[in-house]
Amino acid sequence: MPSKRELLDQALASLPSDVARAALAIVEGDGFRGVIPYAEAKRAAEEMGLTMGELMLLLVPFATAWAEPAISNYRVGAVAQGSTTGSLYFGANMEFVGGALSFTIHAEQSACTNAWINGEEGLSQLAVSAAPCGYCRQFLYEITTAEKLPVLLEGKPAELLTSLLPEAFGPADLGVTAALMSPADHGLLLDNASPDPVVAAALAAANASYAPYTNGYSGVAVLATSGEIYAGRLTENAAYNPSMSPLESALTMCSLAEEATDSVSRVVLVQVDGAIADQTSATAAVVDSLRRSGPVELEVLGAHAASP
Image (cartoon, rainbow, N blue to C red; front, side, top):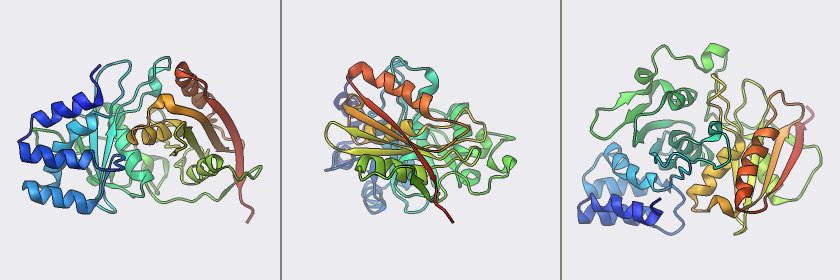
């Protein structure tokens, strides 16, 4: 399997030299974690004589370099533009050897999660290296801006998500009005308070999670051997199966920060007490896959709503 460096070089080889230099400066900048602030993206687009959508399509092959398709060897990249700030967010698919295929992270999920965790409240457009599969179309239909979200593919006219998913079933069909990426604070407190920063990150993620169908709010924080902490939130879906677990969300952020998943040493899951859709077994299944590379500690902690 080619390395990330080789994949970046392949993407650069297809571009004029001046464009290639500008693109490389973006993706190899100090501290790059799959996020391009709007001002930087706007400046790059203007310097290259591109629209924002054209810049996003140019960057998709670079996002693809972050993919970790350990089973399929099929790489998918995505670049989303946030509707709140206009910044750009990378996403890439991720698979786990030894785990069920249902735990696969799709590039569109990755880009959406990246934008959401970085404060966006919707997406204004999404560029992808391949047409979204049905699973991803359903996942995207959950977000706040689904009804007006254009999907961009190289060599094809932009197409609205609603055209790609006719007669869609979504949150409104189940009476949910605050869709995915809406701001949230569920006011959860730990059953047993802890000063541990990893636990605190998992609790914060649970409080911002999206679980309108079960109210089983949950979050995960992973600790890497570098000492960095990456948090992820539960993302439920009206069709249930396209839901994304909080550990998958956290591993997305870990990967986009160029932190290898084999560097994860500890996983903390915080979830509301008595959840009818418990995340423990799903989290443990992915942790078991991570343990193929070394020991990983798993802690599961309960939380409850603050008293009125």
